[in-house]
Length: 210
Image (tube, rainbow, N blue to C red; front, side):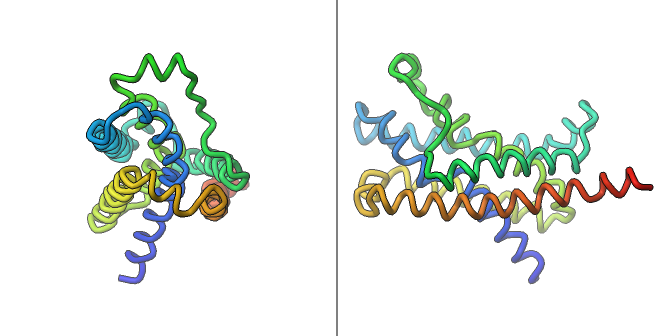
């Protein structure tokens, strides 16, 4: 039970940090500034549904992708660690996202911004996708798989609720509070990145020495 609890906490904290709903709120507010409250709710709901389905597809199809392209789990852990570290470093510097949305893109995707770029890649980015694949490989039992799916679902649900209350929350914690929270989550991501990197590097090095 203690092991399952630890795995559940790892799943929840890693996805919450990588999806980074607090950092997504200002982006969501900017992209939906001209929409009505009902349209903003619809946009947020659709974006999180798309993000959840995308993560589920990559989580359960990860092994097939490994077999097709000859990718090992250890290699994915190393790459995931590098991606996590990069994302965590940006968050530690209080940078919201690397994806820049200019005015032309806003007009182009105004009818369906919930899918691109809000759901992918702002909410469901490469870090979250890699995390879903790697953690599913570590979920050796049905219980762990259920915990992983539940963690992703609850993080997406929490993100949806935070986006709905994004205006009030942003004003409540202020710019300084938002940056502090982002830095804390960035630190968590960087710690997870180190663990992922060396857990993938260790068996590869041991295989080379043998």
